[in-house]
Image 1: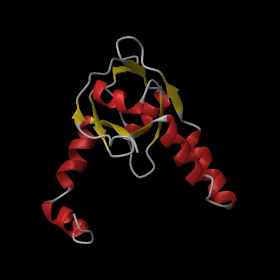
Image 2 (image 1 turned 90 degrees about the vertical axis):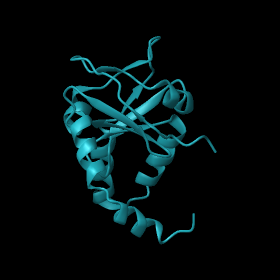
Image 3 (image 1 turned 180 degrees about the horizontal axis):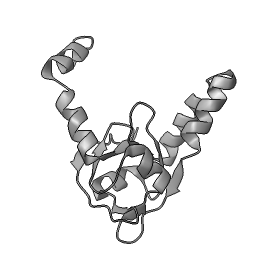
Image 4 (image 1 turned 30 degrees about the vertical axis):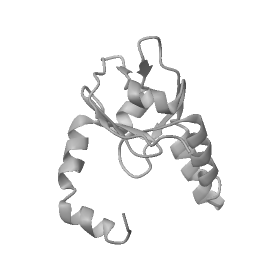
Length: 143
């Protein structure tokens, strides 16, 4: 099992969609990784090649037209990235539009993937999660 992706980072993104991807996350993800639209909110999911394969495998288990349409939507925007010597990646306009990214971003580690968020969207979501929400969710498991 690979190390879990965790932490919060605030890299800059330029007008062309280039951003420095956090070194701590690159070390875990490897020399290349996949950017996809988030499936449960408006962010960009970042998967290692191994986790991307697992993700695709799960998508391939969804039967029928609904499965086909879901795969089309989620995978048509996917983009393989190899950071340059400065650790920069390029985020396509399609992915930036989906995530609402214009100027400021937050990159978080989320266990098996990283996520790239528009800063304002991340702050809003983060503020909405209360201690009561956390305790209710954790009451179902033993830590």
